[in-house]
Structure formats: structure tokens, C-alpha cells
Amino acid sequence: MGVLGCSTSAPPLVHFAPKTARIPLKRPESKEEYSESLRSLVQDNCPSLFTSFEPKWWLNNGHIQTTYSVFADISQVDSVWYRRQNLKLVDGGTLGLDFAPIDDAALSDDTPIVVILHGLTGGSYEPYIKSILTHAIKPVDKGGLGYRAVIPHSRGCGGVPITSTKFYSAGGTDDFRQALIYISNRYPRAKLLGLGFSLGSNIMTRYIAQEGEKCRLSSACVLANPWDLAANSDILSGTFIGRNVYNNALGTNLMNVAKQHYKALMADPSLPIAKALKPLMSVSQMTLTNFDKVFLSQVGGPPPQFPYATVNEYYDAMSSHECIGEIRIPYLAINSADDPVVQYVPMDGAGNGYAVMVLTSGGGHLGWFNDGTGKDRWTTKPVLEWLTLMGKEVLAKSGSERGHKVVLGTDEFLRNEGGDEWLGCKECEGGGLINGNAGVEGLRKGL
Image 1 (spheres, rainbow, N blue to C red):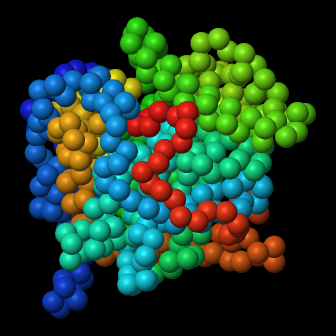
Image 2: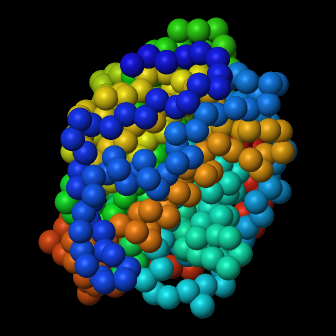
Image 3: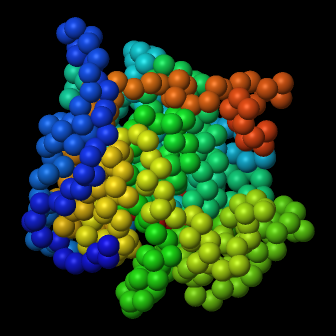
């Protein structure tokens, strides 16, 4: 479905499969187990999902919403601090996991955890993350959900160092898989609730589909998923503003991440990633498409999957629009009809009874601002209602119970039992307290 238009006050289009999945629940009084359809659960427990998006008149356009998300000074809104735990991976790389709240001693070990994936070059400082996270981790007696949250960062993002000659790609799931091994081992009794934004939504969707019944997440909500990377790239490149504004901004952000870690990526000049980095630095007009064509389609992962012959082959391999049918957990996807970056949305949800597909009339890309304060976004209420339903009402196993058994190897790396030996993680030095109101120099937020 192709989508692009102006924001209106029309209610969202909410699509359910003809027959939705039966979701297990437990009555709080009798502890009796029963089930309800996902449709009825969402209709009864997520009323905000069916309300119209009605922004101020001057925010009533997808381009303005997106531009405001990138350029507005709202970094101090929804203040939060994190405690970062760095993980060393078997391949020598480093992941940074930002946990909140930093003082969680009063929380039980079975407190639900919201596992959040950021956008293209983002991090835990992103206002679109904090607009939901701060309410999710706020104590119940102060009006919050009383949950924990954690943001695994892509390699090199959010101030996480690159310690190997490996970058990240648009659809690679192994780093997320390794982060979940650690999280589920650290909190074996906690349900893990997925929350993705933009490119993080694409990665999360692919992981969920790949894992099927073994997915460590018990539910997921994804916002502004780019879905079909080739189709949306073609549409973006086909307009003047798409080509010269959005494509350029996305590519420049990625280029700046690569420049920040140039020395680490060039550690061994004989490796393919170093050889691909040199021509990348000479590209005269940096766009997302050019970055992917010259660099990520060639070295975004290990052989034999990489390199790809063309950038469209890379996009086809990294997309998530054809994965929806394999999802086996409750899954909510929210997109905007006037998102200038994502204009193709698979609203049929592949007929999957676990998928709820939502299209708002407006909101831009990762915007959905109701007003100019940066504090009030349409998405906050429905996502929190979904997280409440999935964390407190739905009967689901913890992340450690859902996934493969985690084992500690003789090399002290945590791995999935019987899994690939080259996938594993362990705690390493670094990390500490992270100011969630400070971004990364040289990078535009909101992307």
C-alpha cells in the first residue's frame, strides 16, 4: 500500500486479520486461566489506539512533523539517566545496553522489561524513545507502569565504541539476538516486551519472525517501520525533497558515524570493510542510498551472505515486509500515512492473527506531535496501553523460558545452547552512568 498525504483528524485505520490469535490470560481473583481474541483485547484495553491524531494547525503536515522531530530543541524533555552495561561479543565487537531506572533495587526480578531498539543512527537519548520510556519506568504510585527498560545500541551508536572491523546493517539480527541472551540471563523471570523505532522496528520484526515460537520477546510494538527498503528507497529517491533532504540527511548521519569510527574500521587495511571505506569517503553526494550501495551492501555482514551484487538485492534481503506471516507473538505496528520516509506499508499484515496494523492519518516520521512542547505525542498513550496489557494482563513466559537455554562456555561467553559458536556475549569494562538528555556530536536526532 502506498501512502503519502496531509495530516487530518480522521481516526486511524486499524487492521486485524479475519481471525485473530487467542491470547492467554489469568483472572486475578481466582487465578483461572482463559483466553480472548487479540482483537477484543486491543479494542477493550487500548482505546487510545482508535482516537484521531489532531495536532496543532502548524504541525498538520508530515514534512513539518518530521522536520520538527529532527530540529526542535526537545532534548531536555522527559529527562532520564541510564546505567550502561557494555558487552563484549565473540567477534570482538562491543554492544552497549542502557538500563533504566538506574535505581531499581525496589523492583522485583519478574518486573516486565521494555526492550527498545532505536532508529538508524540513534541511541537512548532520542526524544521519541524517552517519550514512552519515562512513563514506562515511572513508579506505579506516580502514575507510571513501574517497568524496567533497556536500549541495546547498534555498534558505534550512542557513544558505544567500535572494537572490531564490523559495522551494522539495515536488517541484521545477530547483535540483537546476543543482547537478548544477556538480558534474559540477567533477569530470567522477567517478561520482555519489544518496542522498536524506524530501522530498529525493521530489525526487531525480522528477529521475531526468524525466532518464531522461540522468540524471547513475549510481545512487540513497532513504530515507523520502513518495511520494504527497496520500495521506500525508490519512492524517496523519486522526489526532489526526498532525494535532496531526507535521503541526504539519513546518509549524512550514517557517514558521520562511520567517520567517528574510521580508525577502528581501518584497523586492518587488508579486510573488505577497510577497502570499502576508502571509496565511501570519496562519495561527493552522500545519501542513504549511496551509503548502502558503496558500503553496507558490501560489508554490512559476514560472508557468504555479503557482499550483494546490487543495493536493491541488499534491500530485499534486509526488509521485513515479507516476514509478518512468521510472527508468533502479539505484534502492533504503527505507521503514519504522511510519513515522507516510509510511504509503503503492508497494511494487510499478511493475514497473521497475531498482527495488528495501524495507519494514522498524520504524524510524519517518528513525529506524532500534538503540540510544540515536545511533551505530548499521540503515540504515547496507545503504546503505554499496549505495554500495560502485554506486561500486566497477558499470561506469557519470561524471556529465558521462551528462548533457547542460555549456557556459560568455558571461554566465559553466554550462548544459546546448541547455537552458533560465533554468537555469544559477556560483560566487559566501560559503561557507567549515561545522561539520556545528551546526544552525540555531529549526528541529527530523530532519525
